Image (cartoon, rainbow, N blue to C red; front, side):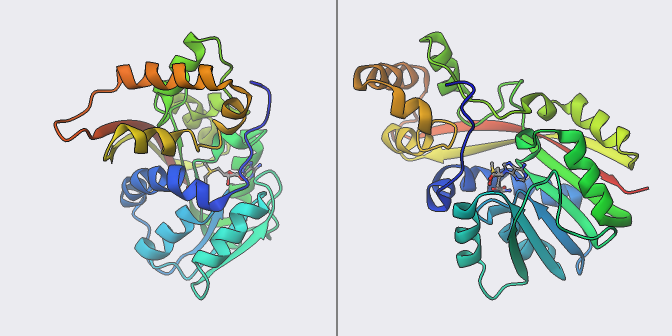
Length: 261
Ligand SMILES: C[S@@+](CC[C@H](N)C(=O)[O-])C[C@H]1O[C@@H](n2cnc3c(N)ncnc32)[C@H](O)[C@@H]1O
């Protein structure tokens, strides 16, 4: 189970869970990157377009090329951003289907840890941006407990239930990001942590939303109803509710930016 790859095949389900989290962290991230308007962007691992929409809405790009291996995610992205300055193509961060020096900026939003060889993925972003171009990324701090449902994962481990992690989880450490960017020869490298909070009106909403995470699909399908109910109760017991019964959860991402030398 732990070795089963996390599959993203449903853009609408993605939107309800990770799309919202992505926007919360992405807002802070793009404020920090602070790109000039009019840039040609590559959104590597664009998913269902959550990060592409942020670029379009906040950064006035000349164009955005989104790349993702998942047809389900890309279909959602194409639908939500029809008529905007964005195009989407199936592909991998490991071999971007773009010419050298053809962008002004490239980013990976919550993708670095899914790339089988992160150094290769970073080298590809550096290859496709022109000299002086921006290369930036943010990723949940998986090792530091920053994933939005880290508490559910903790309780799964305590119950002996395997937790699915992306293949390159270590790349989400701040120091790993620093090394990846430095080894790729970038200059003016900066790093930061981004902590965001999300409110749910009640535990039932929190639970239904969270177990729809791509990282939970296989585990939930394999769990007996009793085990699933036991897990739900353990998480419920750990999460404080406010006076109105609401739940507020935080998550932390690590972010990095640099310029192509
Ligand atoms: C957590 S989602 C992030 C999507 C989007 N950037 C966002 O901010 O919401 C991770 C995405 O990485 C994609 N992915 C997985 N392996 C990849 C690879 N080798 N190259 C590019 N994208 C990949 C997945 O299909 C998925 O859509």
